[in-house]
Image (cartoon, rainbow, N blue to C red; front, side):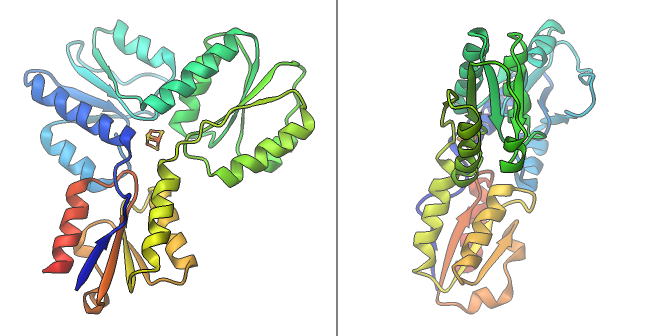
Length: 285
Ligand code: SF4
């Protein structure tokens, strides 16, 4: 059997940085407890590996920050947090390792700059996503208005009195969805400044998968079942009429895949290298 990997697959730069930052924190501080605020990554195998290293997950839900010993280390995830959360941990004596992805940091900075100039900031994205709540925190910190719109319908309902308005996107929103939202807002607010803050990581994995689909008999998409970008990869393969399965690890490879001549592997942006390696090894064995 020939096994072929997509040219781009697995960890994106931001997730890799955050996982490495957490691993480094444990390695360099054996006497300290290391926590992450919420799961670092949407992948059970990766979370299990981090747990084995001793990294504990703090609940991110609830209005109060979970109590942690003052000499511990708290790692902030790739999609960032509102500034008040950083300050609270720092004030409580914890060491904060801010592993917010540089792309998200740049959106936070841009949102804060517009807010300081008294712009109303509109964010296109998922209102319940940590990245959106983090960025909106930087707008609120500068006493400006922040509106989150999740789709065209919500964009239609936006009503802004301020003449200065800027639109930013969640880094992982699809370009198509963002274009629709931006189109509606441009009609309603002709002066609106539209910034493209979409990260290319998702699109790069999608394009690599599309290329691979034409060259194999079946595709295994490796990643967490809760990971939106992993599910999107699987759906893209299916939409191209390619035999595709979403699996979380090597033990889930369907038996009929072992009968194929050429199998392609793709993986979501939160799938660790070792899980992809195990899938490839199992197919070849
Ligand atoms: S998807 Fe892009 S913005 Fe989000 S963590 Fe990965 S590299 Fe950063």
